[in-house]
Length: 239
Image 1: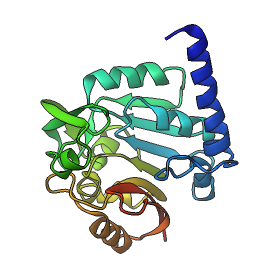
Image 2: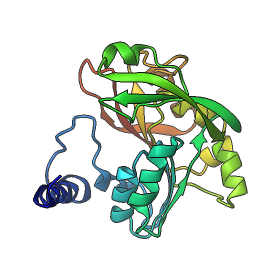
Image 3: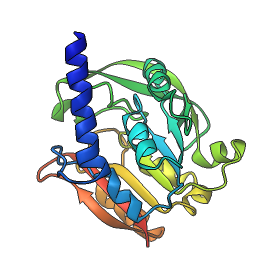
Image 4: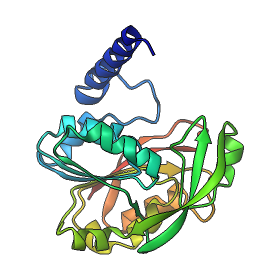
């Protein structure tokens, strides 16, 4: 990419960040996007944040810029993507990266890698409906990744509370949360991708996920789920 094109692209990204995410002047173009500036209503000025499924760090970086006094723990299990995550976030002293998958068990698990139009759909769960609904995304490789529960990681890392969970786990969110009841008790808000249709084997669909969170003290604050979509994003807050 020519230098001038890189400058133009970076400028566009910066403008979008300020207008959509930091100040909410413009409505996001993506219908499943929940602007991050809204989180200020529910979180302290120095929140402890988990970004699980952090990919290359875009959300961690935006959260770090909106909450400069935050502490962010970013988890990404895919080795090649993790390298990009580390490189992209290295100038942010409040972001700490882990090459781990948060899960319901500690050990080693299969990760089904996505490629094609998206390398951000990899999951600990075997893809099913995702292949049909997004036939431009492929799952041609399976790797082993290290996993840990949120409670076990927190105990070993001397983290005694989490204010906010940003979860993009391709259907594994509920299984992960169920395995870590101690840290969940400290959480004030959860931003989570949710599924309306079966996309991965043994995943929990939105209604089951929402009901479980309601039973555990949360309520829906914002839904960003387009009509007839197979997935979307939801912000849950502690009641």
